[in-house]
Image (cartoon, rainbow, N blue to C red; front, side, top):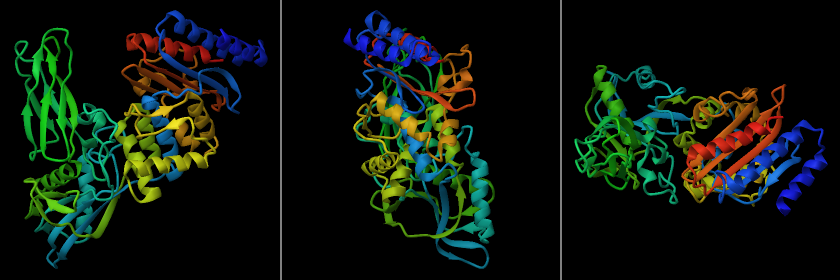
Length: 494
């Protein structure tokens, strides 16, 4: 009762005639009713709404830290845009060892030197098509007079140190496309596609077939089986970058339709080298050697995974650029792309500390936040995507961050990166809401967690209300929780 009273006193202080105050009071009252007996009963919910100057309009346990899920991407993309600039571009360089002969022969190896571009080989709204990317690389070679290569195509991902995955990620998640981990040289977002379908009866093996990209060096075992009707889909690919082995485990129900599943590929640099090697051969280039990458010890290894000689420091021939950071940030937030988010996170670590290990990345982000005059007591940040359940943010911190971003030179790009209802992960959210074009916000979800944070714009397109609504430990169906939280957001509209 004390908590409710304090909010109504706040609402009264704001003035009953104020449409903004009335809107926040309506949203708060509705959330309170759902906490007492609705879909949020027993859940841990935090909520805050402020105006653009930071004046609190309504608040409910806003200083309590919650698991943010993909709401953490707001911090990752915002700090990246602020620190690196909206027009920042990753570079992938081509280099060589050996000698370029007068007849156009590269007597040596060709290196693809990764610089963190997460879009290489991707198939989304911003990535350059793979054939076009490879054409750019072949033009670099042709401009240097190279027409044939006697050695290997080597994927070089040495620019980023450390593990692909964060140590706190769930073991199951690390085999999925959304938990594959970012690397300095990647391909197809370090994912691989598999066609799956139920077996003829419960207990039968699930037929699975890898489609794209190929990873011919992998040793694969299928230990999955068909489940009975209603048992769902619990297929996971268990794999690691420690050795080229993978196992499919879990079940796929008899009443499930065939589909394409997306799993992790821990060898992005090798896959990139392999596909460029294939493309060169298919377009008439002679490549005398095969393809290889570089292991953690700095040694070259081919498809047999037997370490060879120490990798060299290649002479650079030229470079290709990624899409702009503002485009990558928008794809990250609209599609809630974990791989892009982790790439931005690691890029900040590399830029600020010259190391891309997770601890350094966290330090780099916190330095940006301190530069934005944000206290860090409302934040515990383990990764860039929000996949770790050890991430902790308070709604008050997130609202303060969103407010401080309005003063950043990168704010126009940051605001443009956020989806409106009907876009990306908000495709089914508030489709009929009047004035939905004035809502710019990010969703975040995982089991038992649903969060929404962002801006309500005024008629001139400037932030009028900043809000963060975070629900943890929910037990009702996600659709029910989503309906409650999105209705609360609708009630926030003045």
